Image 1 (cartoon, rainbow, N blue to C red):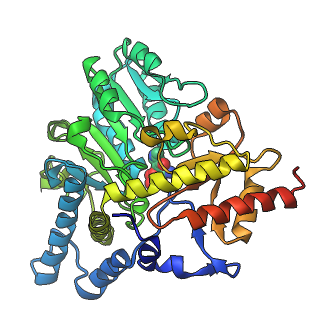
Image 2: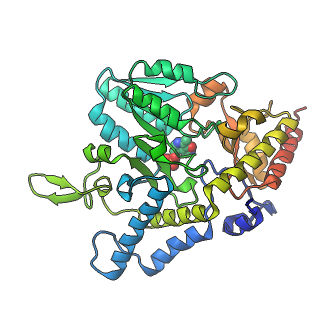
Image 3: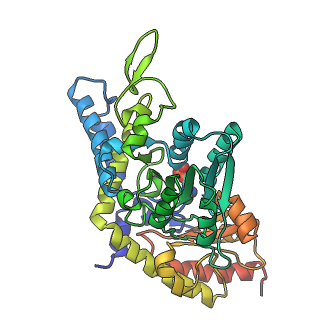
Length: 415
Ligand code: PMP
């Protein structure tokens, strides 16, 4: 059944507000998503009714908070088809999840001269932790190139670079600039054949696509709550149990220990071994409510809806003679592109474009999108404008954006 966007919007209080006297059009969900009332209410309900520290109190509301926090992990585990909540480590965001793997598993396993292989389409959060690690260890960081035009991962180049037997391959499931959807299952199986461990950055996939970590067979999978209708400050590292078991914790303190003596400590069981100190309880509870909301609507329905608007937006932008970076042709779009469209209007700086959009009550992103090597070197521009879609956007939003492009040209005297 198709999504009824006007009904969906009623669940998101901010989308009922106006900017510059016009209905707010939010086209920046790749940066962060808006939040439905059920998520806002779950957090408020927790604070009003059972706020307590978890894993500590022996009284009713503390037990309830502990149960709600663990239940949210059960929901997250089910969403990505992980074995159990034991595989779900809560962190602050995707960035922290990737850094955790870099500082723990990779720190223990990557040695001088080893290779870490990533792609040229990574977000800074899947580049910088590996640059830091490579520098510390004397390891090599290598990048898989992209195909010309469509800017997909060049699979020939990937196979060739796997021939150097990297210790770790880390790649994004969906690009936050190009919207490219990588074949994570194929990339993971090829990497495993070459003896590498695999980390997938799922920041842009989990909110929009059905993700099955068992089917992908990755070793680690990272994503953020705030991009999937949940609160900021809560993110997820999924790891295979045997790897999480062997990994040392990176933060020490309360809750992550089984016992502490003057001579040393032993670690708590999974996943708590990696969660030192008081948890982001409201974040976990809010994320659980977000997963429930997504389940009720259905991720496959959201994906179909986003395909439809993306197809519509691509054709409207083509009419306006605005080309989109990456697999922008309608033919390629179905399996290879998510609802993320980066573009430039010839003769206009993207920052000017974004501020003219803002004056029309439309939020888009402009800049390097935390992917400077991709934007500056592969695309070859200092910056780009970006629209990204979610379940609460529709064709009317696209029409508002497209008519603003004409306005941009008029204001900036671009013929
Ligand atoms: N990876 C990708 C592909 C992203 O789009 C983002 C967020 N823009 C991140 C990682 C980092 O996410 P966070 O800032 O929530 O850590």
